[in-house]
Structure formats: C-alpha cells, structure tokens
Image 1 (cartoon, rainbow, N blue to C red):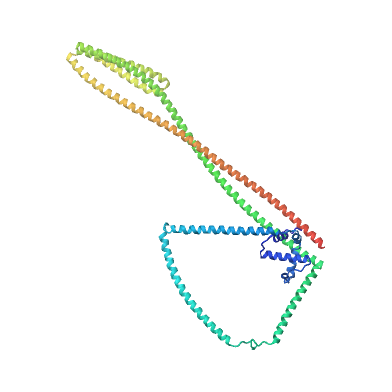
Image 2 (tube, rainbow, N blue to C red):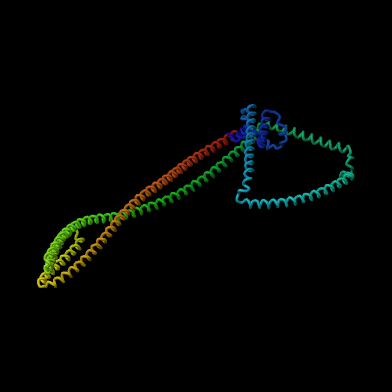
Length: 548
C-alpha cells in the first residue's frame, strides 16, 4: 500500500528547520515511535499520555515512516549557520531599507505640509476646522484633567480605607475552620498530610510502572500488534479513500464550474457573433443602398452627359448655320450699302423727288430680292436639316415660310406703289419722301434697339448656359468623388468586418480546442480514477488474505 500521505507528513517534519507547535507535536510522536522501535526509553514528557487509543494511533500511524526517517540525512551545521546568517542579514537589510523609506516619506511630508498649508484651495476652511477641533480638544483635555483629579482623590480615599481595614484585620486573631489558631497546628496533622502526599506519589509511580509494563507487554504480543496494525491500516485506507472521494467531488465541482463558465462564454460569443452579423448585414444593406443611389446618380449623370453631347452637337450645327447667316447678312449689307450709295448719289445729282421715290422703290425691291435669296438659302439649309431632325426644324421651316410670305406680299405692295408713283406730283412726292425718311429712320432705330436687346439676351443665355455647364461639370466631379469615397468606405468597412469575423472564428476555434483538451483531461481523470479504484480493491483483497 502507498502511504503517500504519511510520507509527505514525515518529509515535511524532517526537512523543516523552523517548527511550529503542530510540527513539534508531530516530531514528538515520531520520537516516541523511534524509541519503541529501538527498545529505548521514551522521553519523560511522553509518559503522561494515558490514552491507549491515542497511543495506538500514534504508534501505528507513523510506523511506516521510520524507514524514511532513517534514510534521510540532516543538513551539515555550517550550512545551517550560513542560512541563518543570510536570513538575519536579509532581515536587517530589509529593516534598514524600510526605515530609510519611512524617513524619506516622513521628511518630505513635513516639508510639503509647510507649503501646502497656504497654497491649497480649502486652506481657510481647513484652518477653521482645525481651530474648532483644537478648542474642543482643549476643553476635552480640561474636562479629563478635572476627572482625573477626582478619580485620584477617590482612589486615595479608597486606599486609606483599605489600609485601615487591613490594620483592623491584622489586629484580630487568626483561626482555622475548626476554631484553632493558625500558628498552633499539631504535629500529627502535619505527619498525616506528609504521609498522604507520599502515598499519592507512590501510587502515581506504581501506575506509571504498570503502564510501562502494559505497553511493553502489548509490544511483545504479535497478535495484538497485527490486530492493531490491521485496524490502523483500515482506518488509514478509509481516510485515504475519503480524501480521494473528496478530491473527486472537488474535481467534479471544478469541472462543473468550468463547464458553466465555458457555456456562458460560448453564449456570450454567440451573442457577440449574432450582433456582429447583424451589424454586417446592416452595413451590407447600407452599401447596397449606397450602390443603388450611386447607380441612379450615374444613370442621371449619363443622361445629362448624353443631353450635353446632343446640345454640343446642336450648338456646333447652329454655329455653322450662324456662320452661313452671317456670311449672307454681310453680303446683303454690302449690296444694300452699294445700292443706297448709288441711289443717294443719283438723287443728289438729279434733285428729282419723284425719281428719288422710284429709285427708293427699286432699291426696296432689290432688298426684297436679296431677302428672298437669303431666305431661299436658309430654306434649303433648313430642308437639309429637316431630313435628319424633323421635330427641331419644323419650327424653323414654319418661320421661314411666314417670312417668305411676308416678303412676297411686301414685294407686291412695292410694285403697286411703284405704279402709283407715276401719277404723283413733285411736291406730293417731296412730302412722301420726307415722311418716308422719318419712318425709315424710326424703324431703323427700333430695329437696332431690338437687335441690341436680342444680342444682350443671347449673351445672357450664353452666359447662363456656360454657368449650367460648369455646374453640371462640378456636379459630375462631386458625384465621382462621392462614388470614390463610397467605394473606399465600403472597402474599409468590409475589411474591418472581415477582420472581426476572422478574429471571432479564431476565438471559436480556440474555444473548440479548449473543449477538446478538457474532454481529453476528463477522460484521463476517469481512467486514473478507475486505476486507483482497482489498486484500492487489490490492496483490500491482499489485506483480507493476509489477515485470514
């Protein structure tokens, strides 16, 4: 049988150098066992143990430890002295260091307190409280001093009364309980007392000798020793089994607590994983919504870009048409200027008002012809565009048709007017000529004002259009920047969530590994318990067979 508990106790007692009360008791018992084993006289302070049961426990509980005691070797004296000196030096050094630290803190505290008294915020409140405490302390000290004087007076009076009573008691004669004087004890009584004391001592010595003989007789009886050893071994086995059971129960409690902690940790990690998954889903939904919004913005931007391209193409076409119109208008103005110069020169040279009216009518007719040619060119240009863009050029065509009809009517009126000029007088022709000059000047001024207003309006439209284009370009850049920032934030969010998910998976893997290790440890512990039970069973069977 493995008496590892006894061996540990014996090794602890032997290897220790500073023994407490319990260890001294254990050492005393071991010395008693050694004295019995070597047939020597036990120590005197062990002879007073009159309990046979305790003595049996002491003897047979430590009999198996004798071989370990005999085999152990004590340390040499010089080593013990060196250890004691080193311990003493360490204690002295430790005490000096603590004293230095205490002196340092006390000195600095006193120095800093001198400055803190008038630099702290609650100095006046603290000073008032200290003054109140000081006044209370003084009043208390005065009251205590007065009470002390009263108590001293009462003590003095009681001492005087006691001395008086002691004097009175000493003056009285002293008697025994039987009524005799204290100093008159008979010799026979003293002899009887002495004989009683001697009889008690002899009885005690006799009892001790009988007890020693009884112990020696018991030690010389192998059956009694075997029975006692069997009883003690059974008690030791039961104690050992009780310790094993207690350890198993404690281990089961620890396993249950560990299992509970692991379960709580698993639940907490599961909840955390659910929360993180919910956050990840929310982030994915946000990213999805942001992607949809960005796709909508991109679609709007693409539509706007398409519109801008179409407007630019239309602008280029309008610029070409405008260039053609400018060329035609320049030719018309140049021809008109030439005609007006020829008409004015002829009128100045001839001085005939009727001829002037005729020449004006003929010049108007030529202007109308020029306008008709220009409109014809415009109509042909519009006709070309009409085949490609019917919706846009319909308005232009309608305007040109109206202009052509108006110019045709105007030409017919001028032809009718040319016929009526033939029947006019010279004075009437002069009046009509002056009136026409005034009307032409007024119309010319109005046309120039309208042209200037249209130019300003066109200029404002162009500026507004350029501003709109700049805003669209800026919006396009902002959309691209937002899209880029959204992609970067999406990438960073996805990366962070992926790292969190990886860490959670790693924690879950570690937890699974821990659970696997715990299962292996539990399996090993169960196997160890089975082996211990088998060993205990074999020991019980062997002890039963030996006893039989």
